[in-house]
Length: 364
Image 1 (spheres, helix red, strand yellow):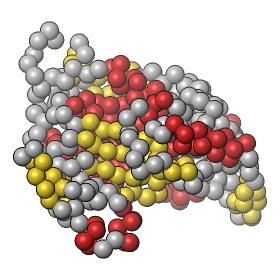
Image 2 (cartoon, one colour):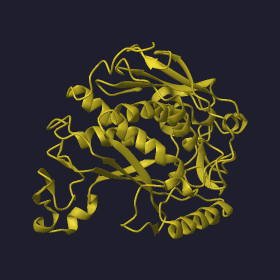
Image 3 (cartoon, helix red, strand yellow):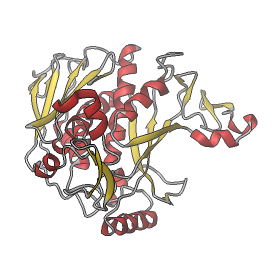
Image 4 (cartoon, helix red, strand yellow):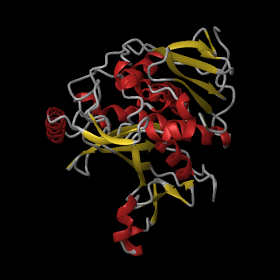
């Protein structure tokens, strides 16, 4: 439903054009001195209206903490964080309520909820709701920092333009594409602007990595680490594929090439390669946890498309109006980071690697 996690649980709340979107986080240890500036920075990275390659919807997206903090320190109670929706124009959505937009959840949400679903801006099915994911994920990242784990992501591909395999996930904020390779970033931005001018959209891929992850977290069979990560990633609207390590390329390899052979580095067990993406048998092996997330093109495009009028049950055409991202991938980078952080923090808490009370009580 609307809740993810076992030990660190988040519940997503709000709708795209409702009064607020937000999140309730339960299970966060007491004693974490929460850096709200870091949280706001993460939220700003996801915010609409950042550049010419994103939607023109302009929202300040100022995080407001309603519960769970006392003098900036977590109390162990549920943490509620919201942002207020301000720049809303629901008129186009209400006009097209009975003509489902191709590529959207309009038709399927109607099958599930009848005529009661909120059609404004996509309601509960909108990418706007990922703002809550990012706020919760920022807290999870700060929890992971207490055990030395860092999460990094970047834009790996836009359409047919792919960043070099040698790309580092550091310094991705230097350009609007969030691609660490400057020359590739320029190509990506030009491609996004091109499809935008044509009234179309384009998809791509985000790569994410957890550095210095805990060893031995995850459970076999139904609660594997990659299974939980995949579920979290697929909770992001527009995600169509999730790969770990070499992913689908494993089908082209021999076992002798695909196997990550074990070695000793500075007295620690490591592998020569990381084709498995840091996970074996559903359990982390201590190597960086690496995943590639594929996003479809934004379904809201201004080109005429075929649809049906659900009132008359006749075929018709639709031209989607409003303000939409020509490519969702750059804004999805912090969302992907958030989902990986939430799952790793959840498993770390379940394994007892992060205590339920952090540090010593000082000036609270």
